[in-house]
Image (cartoon, rainbow, N blue to C red):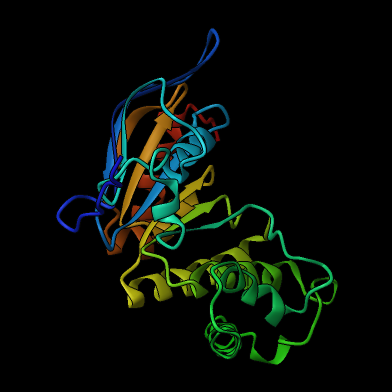
Length: 255
């Protein structure tokens, strides 16, 4: 059977009428949403909202029970190999190899893709500099702070030059100040490079401060609210609180 071709005239990510069940447990129910190319979208929801299941669908690790999932116009489960360099993932934990230096960790994805050795070293060095860690190239993970380790992890993801970056609770284990600075730096890089980004979070601040569009989900994954934050939502304390409280109400969070 001939492989499907990726297209440039469709959304980067599209789920249509998707449902996922594990036996009698419904994880996702009739879920539809799209992420346009070059857009940063937040998938915001509490535990049990199907966030991880949705990411696994998009990564091709899981097939839907019903409905359709498309990434760059193709089925990520059936055409997994075509997406090897299209999608990169940043996880909640940094997943660095403890026996590799920061530079060697950034090189890993490029090595898996069989990049030429000298180009791999050059690209990894450039990406460490882009995330502000050029002086940490020869340090091992245990010598780095949590924020620095997450920067190395994200540099590793971006070094393969993916079309789509999936972030799974990447900032949740960092303190507020470190998380805020890292979010600002990563969103700047994503916009500069015109990447598409879908990031999963349960933290309302993350979504408001970073996303072009926020999708708020309840459990099982059902869209409760869609909102495009304005500059005022991010910079004006009163507007920020109004939006924060609206999202919290939709999520059933009492503060």
